[in-house]
Amino acid sequence: MKIALDAMGGDFAPDCTVLGAKLASQEISDDIKIVLIGKEDLLKAKLKEYDVTSPSIEIFHADEVIEMGEHPTKALSQKPTASIPVGYGLLKSGAVNAFCSAGNTGAMHVGAMFTIKAIEGIIRPGIAGFVPKESGGFGVIMDVGANADCKPDVLYQFGEIGSLYAKHVLEIDDPKVGLMNLGEEEQKGTLLTQAAYQLFKLSKKFNFIGNIEGRDLFNEKADVIVCDGFTGNVILKMAETFYDLLEKRNIKNEFFDSFNYEAIGGSPILGINGNVVIGHGVSSAEAIKNMTLLAIKMAETNIHLKIKDHLGD
Amino acid sequence: MKIALDAMGGDFAPDCTVLGAKLASQEISDDIKIVLIGKEDLLKAKLKEYDVTSPSIEIFHADEVIEMGEHPTKALSQKPTASIPVGYGLLKSGAVNAFCSAGNTGAMHVGAMFTIKAIEGIIRPGIAGFVPKESGGFGVIMDVGANADCKPDVLYQFGEIGSLYAKHVLEIDDPKVGLMNLGEEEQKGTLLTQAAYQLFKLSKKFNFIGNIEGRDLFNEKADVIVCDGFTGNVILKMAETFYDLLEKRNIKNEFFDSFNYEAIGGSPILGINGNVVIGHGVSSAEAIKNMTLLAIKMAETNIHLKIKDHLGD
Image 1 (tube, rainbow over the protein chains, first blue to last red):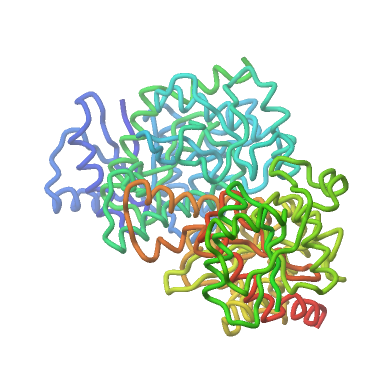
Image 2 (tube, helix red, strand yellow):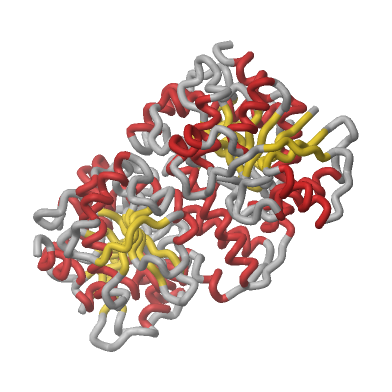
């Protein structure tokens, strides 16, 4: 199995990506290879600098880099040999089983849509995030930013996709799906959540447990939290900030450590024909390691095929 | 000055309301009276039980109680002598300068709209919440639940109203108004936030500083955070939950103490012809005290008149 890592993506690349790959290589079995995508000479020098000799790490050359601030569509068409399009090329051809990057998020998203594309029948692929649960482990929240405005049927598919992800990747049996809302009652909420509720409650595809509220994010009510990308983005950034506020005040606690974005390292794009994880621009080596391990876990479970197979069941 | 407190409102009324009034009475000047609205015999007995002899506390009889689960409009028409409609009656007649309740939120909201009514020109009154700021003090967030779906012009008015509130009640000079969004750039967000941005940036009525994100809630970027009631509700409940999660783990910290809903005690309804504060159903005596003090502060600044006067400036 091969996992492609965009070695040029992220504010601290290629140092943190090389170091992250090194950390990941120490935790994986021999049959898994991490393919660093980027400028070969530079990466070779960095591997030497950081004393990386693991046979699990390979390099695949990519001439250019899409910078963080570049316009996604323009950059992709003007730089076809940059690490992001090269990574998608490898993923599409089947040369690698997953692709992850802490680089330009927009380019990662657009790149997915134009190369490996959405699974047939998926209205809108989304980005999943993770929220730590008080009982241990994580829940899935979807969407966290790819689709600011959503229609009810899009939310419904997020329920399906999120449920499959929770089942196969997080290994949660019969995951509970909650609809993020401002009250528990069926008739509460926006026109969107009211209409979505009516679709959700008829679902035989996932275990809908009703509306949940902002106070339920970290409790056991729901394993999968469905919301539009606007709401999910606010929630995810707020949760990360909570960790930062605690850290600034030197408050250490095992549960709150899981609010650190590094603990998971990345957010999968779900509903596309391949396993793709997007990392934070500020990714540290620890974050890159965890993003890579998450991509491996997704490739091992072949979650994209599970989603494809179960769609329209 | 007289402040009406719904003595029958909240899960722990009338015990916590009487005790809260007692606590508040110890912090106010002699010219302020707290008027407990509710069943006279019961309240007299409670005042005796809790040894309340303050001359600052009066009772105004109300026969009935609107329970927490009752349908607002139905309850208001079927129980015109309940504490909530009686409180609004006193407020409308000018017998009291503010009215606060930890009772049925819907009945408080509908009651406001049908008695003292929205200020002419206000499209939709909203409920303001408070977010603790790292530098000390609080920022205002509006709306936190009255209007799940909003139009851009409604958000624009929240910017105006929130700015006046921050200036006059929180005493923040030239308050910075931020639009809650999923990215900083002008073109980011939902159709709603994109359109609202275009209105906001032309504003001469308030100091618009641009989009803010979930990570900016507690920092100094904005004193006033504008969002639809759905988003604000999720944010407020999530912030309260942070406090609960810390408390459960016995983590004490001055800054995080201000995440406790008790620290402010209530959320004002803004854009109506009177000073009204709604409290949490679970309000403790401490929360009732702070809700009452907030209502006094609003009455002292006559914020509802400031909003009325500045509208359409």
